[in-house]
Length: 264
Image (cartoon, rainbow, N blue to C red):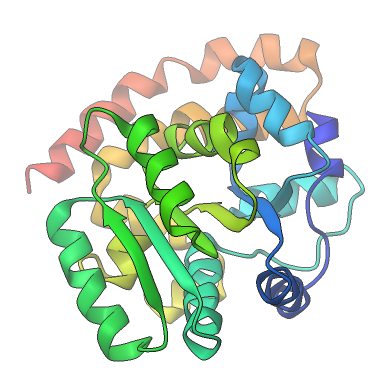
């Protein structure tokens, strides 16, 4: 996992946005991975994700505060967290200013309808190359066909980890240009379908807590990736072998607790 940290972007959000702007204006191609603890843990288990995370041609940012803290524990100084929502919003703003093309792939049809309205009203300079929901069967075929035909400048893929990253990775070499970003649930937020965490959670880097509070079913996923990530980052392999059997039984309790709150 050490190699993953070495590929993380370490400077400020504003500097990263300047970098994205330069890529956009020069019409270059780049795969942006908005990584969190789940991404890193999947990299250990999944060969394809591992290859993406160690590929120096990809741009990897720390979307989750866990990665920022983990990097600092490992001796790597990362200035700040850069979220996928903020990256998507910034790219939409710059595309609007420069009359660039945007293609959105993923999310539900009704969410895309709301997103189209937002773009029309708030980012009127954008040329919409296409919006395709994430529930079609022939994803790869449609994805490649649309991009080759419309040649968008920014491609936002909202299929969730790891589907969105794998889709981009399978086909990015087939295209001449474009900033490709796996944005997860960002389209839900930007379209107004789901409310983003209040500023107090954003400023204190506790958006993860807000998501658990509002969607308790996420607790199991949080335990699966974040707790294991913490153990792997802080403790030696020998220590983890002792600690994990003590913590593992609580997973069932957490799942029951999440179901209890979900029914409220």
